Length: 87
Image (cartoon, rainbow, N blue to C red; front, side):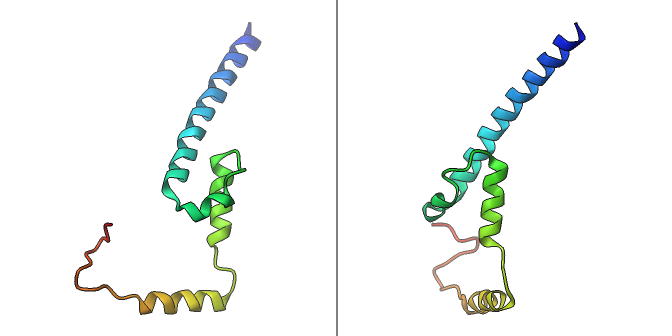
């Protein structure tokens, strides 16, 4: 009898994980731009998608960090733009 209870609880846990994974995957897909889709299309879990995107955007060296810092420094808002930027 105890084995059946554990099996039922395990099945419920798996179903909950599947539901949560679908929601998380949908949120990731809805949140990224189209040019990033090729990096995650063949990944089956939201955790792996997150890791792939994190690796993609991790600064890998000092030169890259300085380049990004300079780009950010050069960004200027025009008079007709508002913050936060809405398109």
